[in-house]
Length: 260
Image 1 (cartoon, rainbow, N blue to C red):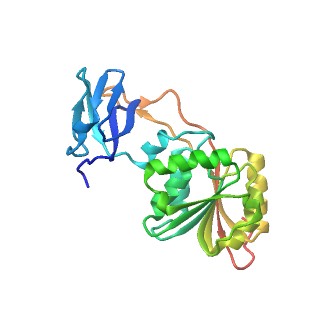
Image 2: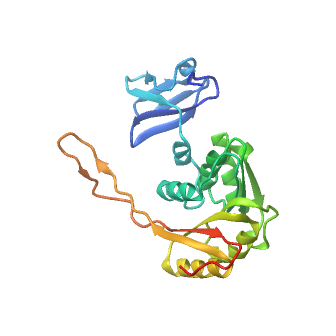
Image 3: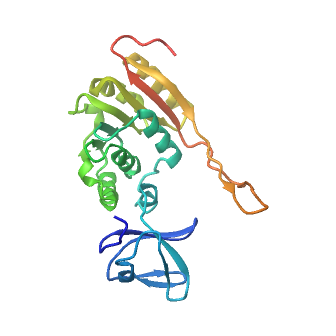
């Protein structure tokens, strides 16, 4: 639905650096250049504009998951969108799939997976730190995807109750400890994505995946450089997002996989 109703999530957009997520309600939302009476949004359509009390023009959009994640409480470092998107694409996730996530953290990857498998799929996410699990629970609630996610407050090294899952995603400091459990939980041909910040961790991970019977498809590093798109001044930005994590993609084999 494009019409804004009470309780609808709203993205008030000024520019790439100044944007805010709120909810259509009877409250008043304050910005650095005036306020907006949020009840004036009711009945408007996404894509319309609204002015603050001081005349600042704001675009009114429906927030995407990537926008919602920017508003998350972050007790942990979250994965970057470039890494999340690449992993979700490589895993081949579709509506109806069941996915295990090891290391809920702040929930950014969790809700991204849930969006990919919704409405008939499900995400089971494991986190052993209660404070992280609580923060993730609140973050997940903001997105409206809670019905597609089950949180488990449990040490994932003890194994999983879920079997024959489509994919496993691992974001831990010691992901190699999950290789055997992931293999047992995956359906034949099922996919795995794991994230490691250092080459030492990557080396241990790849060795353990192969020992557990998983075919290592690839390990990659992604760089992201924004372009300044001003008329007559188009050029790369001075700063860029460089190394964030190595992404390893693997697949369950029923026979011993070839070394790669």
